[in-house]
Length: 134
Image (tube, rainbow, N blue to C red; front, side):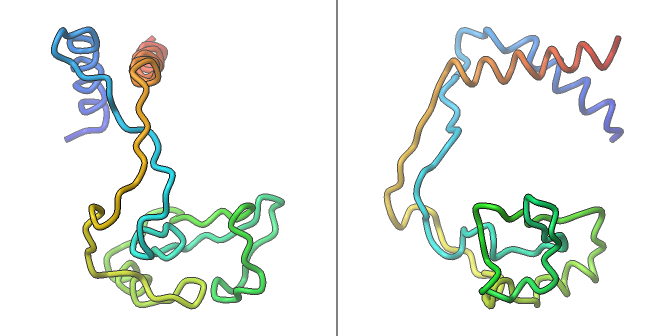
């Protein structure tokens, strides 16, 4: 399926359903607790490590350089299956990638929702779509 077709269909869905009487605007937008090490975003495969000031991180296992508040850790570009499998075998900040699934419902965690935020994100998406097709 082409990207343009998917975007058209998503915009069509939003247009038809954004004010649907049965629509729920209770989308969770933030969970403020650490659920488990298996959900720590810094323990997942990445190939891009840089601090906000532009300094490149040369060793993503050097915990003496660890500063999560100023760190960008991400996947850059396309990673083919072979390279991704190698990234899964790597360690990140000395920890292995958590490959075993652990359910989120082991501990209670906060849930915040805002219908007005959900609606505003829908409107923003529709506005961006409209600017793309013009």
